[in-house]
Every structure is written in C-alpha cells, then in structure tokens.
Amino acid sequence: MGSNAASAGPLHMLFFPLMSPGHMIPMVDMARLFATRGVRSTIVTTPLNATNLRRTVDSSAAHGLPLSLHVIPFPDPAATGLAPGQENLSTVPTAHFNTFVMALFHFQSPLAALLRELRPDVLVSDSLFTWTADLALEHGIPRLIFHGAGAFPLFVLTNLVNYLPLDPSTESFTMNGLPHPIRLHKNGLPELVDNFFMLKLLGEAEAKSYGVVVNTFHDMEPSYVNYYKNKNQTGIKAWCVGPVSLFCRAAEERAGRGESPADRERVLGWLNSKPAGSVVYMCFGSLCHFSGAQLREIALGLEASGKAFLWVVRREAAEDAAAEAEWMPEGFEKRVEGRGLVVRGWAPQVEVLGHAAVGWFVTHCGWNSLQESVCAGVPMITWPLFHEQFINEALVVDVMGVGVRMWEGFRRNRLEEAKVLVTAEEVAAVVGRVVGGGGEEEVETVARKAKEYGEAARKAVEEEGSTYEDVTSLIKELDAKRKEGQEDV
Image 1 (cartoon, rainbow, N blue to C red):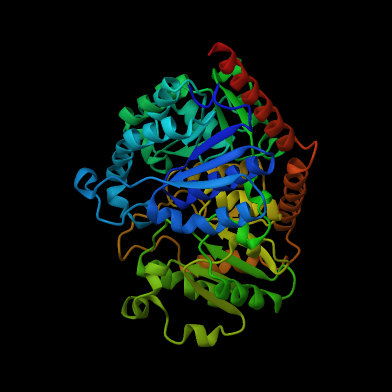
Image 2: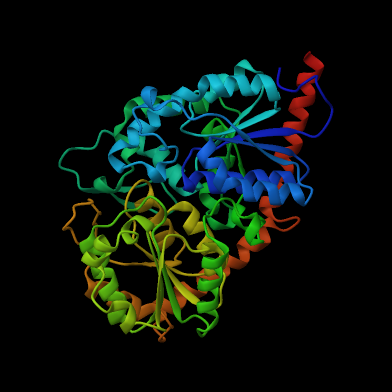
C-alpha cells in the first residue's frame, strides 16, 4: 500500500509531531530539511497548531520546496476531558499531562483516513504516538520514530530498566557501564519512568518500527550515537538528522517559534548595542513554570550580578499586571534600564544565541534549547526543571563540558507558590562569575569547548559532513524500500 505503485515521483514522507513546541519545532524543521533534499514532505497537525506553522510552510513552498501542511481535527473535548482550545501541551496545566497523552489515542481514525488518502511512502511520528507503528504496518510503509531527545538521554533511559524498581530509600545512584559514569537522582528522573503501561507501549512500538531519527550529530555525543547506530545492540536502525535548527537560517523559515517581527527587531536591536560576549540570556522554554517568589529571586539576582542580561518571562506570568506586580521588584526595570531587558513571551532564540553579544545561556536544558546553544557555540548555565532535563544537564556539564550548574547537588521545582528553588544570591554569584570571562580557568575552558562544538555542528550539516551523509543514506534506503514495495504489488 502507501504510494507504492501509484507513482514513481519523489519519495513522500508524512511527519506527525506531538503537539508541543519542543517536538513540533524540530520535526517541522526536519520536514523542511528533507524537502531541501527533494523529498515531498507533508506535515500533519491540528487547526490551532497549524496557525503557528503556516508561515514556515508557505515561505518554504514559495521558495520551491515540496513542503505542505495538512490539518486534521483535534478530538472533541467531550472525548478527551480537555478544555476547548487545549490543542498543545503549552496550553495544558501540568496536572493534566496524562489526560493530554491519553487524548493522543483519539487520532488513530483520522490519521488512518489520511494515510489512505495521501498514500505516503514513510511515516515519521512522535514516540508517544505508539499506535502509529501498527498503523504504518497496516499500510505497508516504514515508520520512523522521533523522540525529541538526543542519543545520550535515550541511552540513559534505555538502561534505566536495569535499575528499576528503585529502592524507596534510594535518593541517587551512579549508572555504570556508560563511557561517562553518571550520577542520577531518583526525583530527577522523567515522570514517564513511573508509567509502566506507557513504557510497555513504547517498547512494543519501537520493536515494530523501522528506525529512529535523532536530532543530534555524531561529534556531539559520539559514544552514544555509535551505540544507537549499532543495530546488533539496539535492535533498531538509527540516523542522525541534526542539528535541524541549522537548516533554517532565515527568520521566516523557522518553524512556529512564535516571535513577531516587532519583538524580533526590539530584541536584536537591543543586543546590537552590547559588547561581544557581555550578555547572559535567560529563557526556560514553553512548558516551564515558576512561582512568583522564584521569579522575584531571579530578578533580584540578575540585578545584583551587575551583568547585562536578556530575560524571557512566560507570557502568562507577565500578561496580568496584578500578578506581575506581586513578583516584579518595584522599580526593577527602571534600575536596570540599558543593562537588562525583560521580554514577555517569546524571543527569537536562534538569532539571540547566534548574536555576538550573548556570552552565556541560562537554560532549563530542554533538548532544543541545548542543541541551539551548542550550534551557536554558547556555553550554558544549567537549571533543569523536569522530564529528561536533569539527564540532559549531565550531558552538558559532565560529558561535553560546555556548561556550569546554577547550583550544586539536587533540587527540583515543585510549583509551590511560595517555593524558592534558587536564591537571588546564588543567581548573582554564578552569573557574575561566568559572564564576561574574568580569567577563571574552569570558565574559560567551558567557553572554549562550547565554541569547538559549535564549529563541529556546522561541519556536520555541510556536504560530506556526518549528518549530511546520514540524511543521504536514509533517503536512499527509504527510496529503495519503496521500490521493493512497488515490485511486490
């Protein structure tokens, strides 16, 4: 089935991302990457999510790329238990995460109908769409898994089964057998570790899938990429397709990153006035929430650091004047005027990190942010909050050596309104120590390594680079598989 006997035209890949910024952005960038290589690429999403992607798709199509967008309805709220309009994880309260995940099963019927209509040659779907493995088999096409994470966190999570269930008294343990022994904290493991039903589904779906595409490049995490590429060890094929953000250099080509032209010009114009490497950029992604008390500590810490800063605050924390007044120190923006800029909502992160003025990045260690920082050669101050972010922090600090921790030991944001995870004094001390150099050997070494990884990332996506060759190999293999299917018809 698929488009097998229907046409000898270009390979047709259908991309179905999880409705969450951290998954949609890289998968749409990936679809665009394959389109630049002559692959007909179709992105599938829901109406509200499509509004964020249409600019990217329309711009790419206008430049002659075979990229298109197909919209299917989000399941009825009466069936999912979600509120109307909650079509993206960024709009769903943390407590309703599992409700959202269960709602994904309602997409089986509309996606099956779409596969019958479009007859693609390949289905690339997010790992949480476990049922798409069977759906692809029914339609006689390969399914490629996209996890949204890198090779290192996937390796760690795969090996966790050897340590589960953890003793109730265990607070932390060392995972041995890795090229770099890693200390993991029980309370820092992804929430999915406790969902044995979902872990079982993920394992079964992976066994039925054709392979895995990973948003990484070989030289970023070579030992772990090599493991995933060894089918004898993993039982499944793997290809590196990253860093996908490097393939979309023009602002209008970037997938649904949310910035308006006016916001972009304001932010970049402000950075233009700052010396090279003098600014710390602080942003915690689209799903991370802080208490008002913690936001206040961040503000006071940035002010006390004496360093220039660009701080992105979630729109929800800033759009209500009364709510903002509770955490924003009185007169704060006036006192830091010229030295600090608070952005409410989104900033053009890829361009910000690529700006010469930005010297360090305070990050929650989400995989996309981590990748974008590595691509820009910008060292990181790590502040993980949930999901696999504590594992990603170990990669950044302990394996790659391109970051320093905001704090030592283990702490976790529990979303308690009065909870302070990191004090103003701690923020000021770390930011003040690293931004602008200062000659400290550890800091200088971290900054140097970050630049080296940035150069390696750019080489990986160039012709004959490791990622370029992986993408070429994958396209050839998928095309050969399509031709096999045509012969079988």
